[in-house]
Length: 172
Image (cartoon, rainbow, N blue to C red; front, side):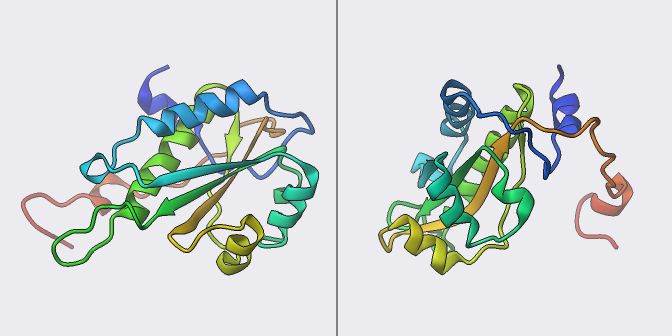
């Protein structure tokens, strides 16, 4: 499959089969994230895999949606602000590096027949507490992962290239 076909195949899955995801497949998608680029190669990310019903329920309290609770696994993507690269003006690239890793996770999952959904609208403070994280780690996103129960890939609306591309400077 070409990369563009893979990008078109990936979508935000909110309907999972009641089927566990094999540990090997979870490690395979995390391996793809491990190879994602990061500023100055500092790699300021940490992944917490949640598969037990008890922990999934506790994490679900931070994002109380029925579809989310039904995902067979959740990958919690954390950024490590103590090790991330900071630009001269103070810009911390931790979130950027974590986002690149998440993108690699979602594409790798789609490539092996798994679905994901990038979740950011969760109670960050509660999630931090539930996981017992140290202060330098921040939960950037929750990534439910599993076998999709959807019958077909939904059509994704996308802006045209003319709407999102400028040449030689900004043009509206």
